[in-house]
Length: 490
Image 1 (cartoon, helix red, strand yellow):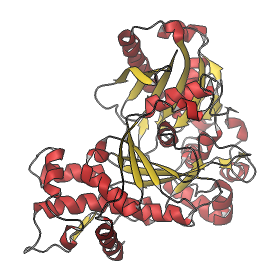
Image 2 (image 1 turned 180 degrees about the vertical axis):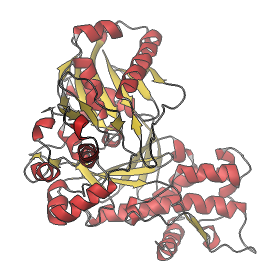
Image 3 (image 1 turned 60 degrees about the horizontal axis):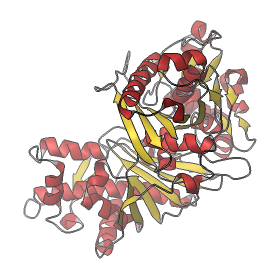
């Protein structure tokens, strides 16, 4: 038996086929080969056409089916992961009424800030666990204020993954975790955030049917099955935003378990079992994939904008274009703490973890008589790890105790120096796995369709590639972090 996983990103759409017997990927493909365009009509805007996601999904799926050479009747379920926070609006005919306002669009910041002040922090942080901020509900309010005639045609709103599920099945649906990522869920009342909706002047009728994350939500229609070349009636049985899904793909489901990524930007995502929030909204809390009224599972998300982008900038501008392994070798020529050189990696826009301050990147303590290229390269990787630690400490204040961090062996986690520094500065074990969002969605689909009995069985075949424990540099790294934090100014 097999399941399909679809991962709708802002750069491409990836499709993977999972063999449930051995837990291995049979085939995968992404489309397009170049990044999908992002429409930016004005500065700070970012939009994409949902139809483009659908067409790219079809192309990627066609490649997977061509390369897999399997009996298609053995495909038993479909799971979907997607870029978070995007607004998709449909009319009564199910047609998209405007391009999707996606996650990195900042037009609704002032709207969300005003809502936070006027609704009050007590309601926003205790009921929604976040400020309305620049999230999906605030994006919809922008449409209502600035495009009233268009707004009047909206029948239902969705997240990007909900739209792909709708195109597959014809059913307009969403999930609690999806609503929570849009700041449209009231955790105290376990219902749609009606107080926020009333404030913004929305009707809760805009919300489609709410279905469990893991469940046979709807089935692929006859017409779409013929179009895609797959059997009709395959259930869509899982959907989740990319960061909750990344955590799920790493078997991060229970309190204290933590997932991390470190590409251009970086994320740490920890699971909590209580309705905690950060008073300053420096980290964000959403319903995790296995959250329900009886068993609370909240995902606390920390984002650092300036992670791998710093390393790539150094490669182009400081290291003479040498490859990343050579940069790592160069950095490891000096000891932990880089002889007092400090690097602050905040050069990729406003950082939520710093209260939305945008201090810019900074190299501090540079001595012409001591420091060289090796020190700069090491200080940069340490600075990235230290920025994660700064956020993880905030998560610790919310009750998340980090003892194990799971990550895919990719991007910054390919660097032995970076992952060892992370282990040392967090005082935690780092576990690396070979998985990704599309495969996580495929596992979720199998679990939602009852093809796996439980999460334990779903992850039986997920193999840990490497484990990194804190080593004898831990004290030196901790001292360097304290110095870094003491000198952090924003």
